[in-house]
Length: 274
Image (tube, rainbow, N blue to C red; front, side, top):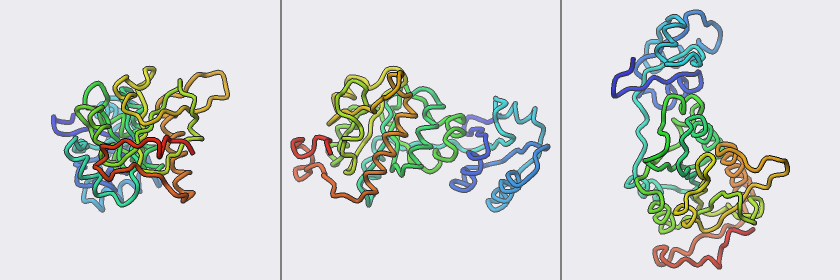
């Protein structure tokens, strides 16, 4: 079993990504002794390149190591991913060479949803994901499996006070766009091209009051069927890929007036409407 400083991750994509992206964090690997073919061979080659021994073992032992039967025949003991904190975030933003695209998740507690959000964030080119430190799931083994490598490639920051962090993002020149089902503005009529933090709320609860109040504008995903809303991971994917579509159009962007350090909130210049 893992000790207090390690984590057992599982699933082909999660383990292979860890070997490719952060091999220094991987300590050992176990493979199903009955599995053959290109997939286990590719993982063994990646392990050998990182000078890590891949051990063959029984499926029962893999079940015990992973704590689940849904490990796909591979388990790795790794150092856990250590998210950045409030202090790290400012320096990270200053180092970006493109208009920031951040995903902010307000209290997501389901590891499958967080993992799916990280996978979409990686695919859409998100620069970082921001999570509150309390009342939200961290980067667990299940999150890493569902993320299919996204947890290793997308920087994650866990902050003490999310409302304060959103204020600091505004000071840094970002616009704060919240996803909500009770606003008239639709996603596809919203300008997502400039420096942006996209904020989504927790499962079934949506944005908390203080988080919602920090948003420069709110937008909704138009729903054509009978369901009222999407879950947070599906909604994040829809919003992020709309932002990616707009940014690839290479149209002129509107940025927050930051001449006075962001203290002047001149929303008349940009209200989120295309």
